Length: 124
Image 1 (cartoon, rainbow, N blue to C red):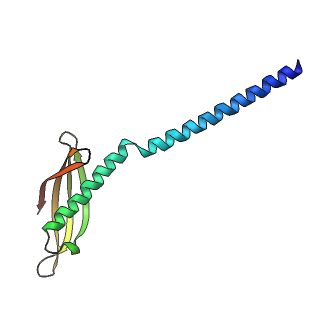
Image 2 (image 1 turned 45 degrees about the vertical axis):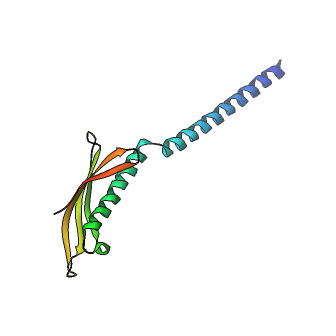
Image 3 (image 1 turned 30 degrees about the horizontal axis):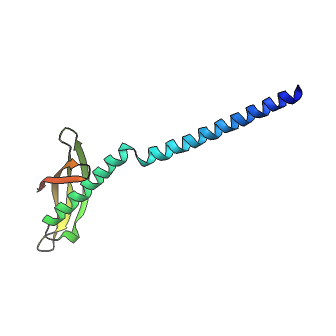
């Protein structure tokens, strides 16, 4: 009889340890997959792409693109239009080598998952 009780307690311990192990494995999978594929990652990726695209568009309009230094960048996303607006300042040299600060705005629309189009770029 005492042999049956000790076997019963041993099997309960084994079941408990197995359940704890399964719980830990499931928790690790949840944390890993949530970190790898969250929608926030895609939003950040889109925002980064819009930021770097805006910088390249503005550099193309400057007399000395290599001298460009960007500051006060603000990015806004309009969900209805699926559009990013990037505004800020750029310091760059003009034709005479004098550094000037100008404001800019670039509007970029997301037309697909990895497809973007610049719809406006203005240097004030």
